[in-house]
Image (tube, rainbow, N blue to C red):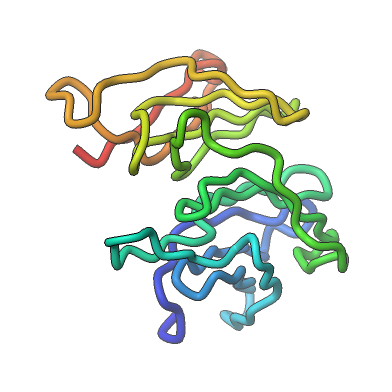
Length: 180
């Protein structure tokens, strides 16, 4: 997608899996890719998607991880340190209501990607500028750190993504990737 700034998150639209919603974290927008035709268009922009530069940093990371569940698109915004959602139609378009914040990072943590259970509980990778770990947030926005490490730890450093296993044996196991 040549016109994109920095593609970061991607999720299929649940009832229209030929559409993929793709986060452009520099533009602060959501693109929809039609896998049948190859067409791409910006479908949602919202202030909660926008990258807000951190003082003393040129790193622009707005909307980051994205996952669609039911009639919602759940997302993180790294620079704004938030986890939110926005209502979407069955074909991945905005319903017309603004995005809402579900939670902000604990103790100044920022969110990268995340895994989303079917019951709406999210497990978010945290790291930049705050505690390194996995933060669990329920559908009501209540969060707690379920695993954490010192920043720069030689064992595990800066989780960036999380996913549940895909087979019957490991579907309840949370895997995560790190930047270090």
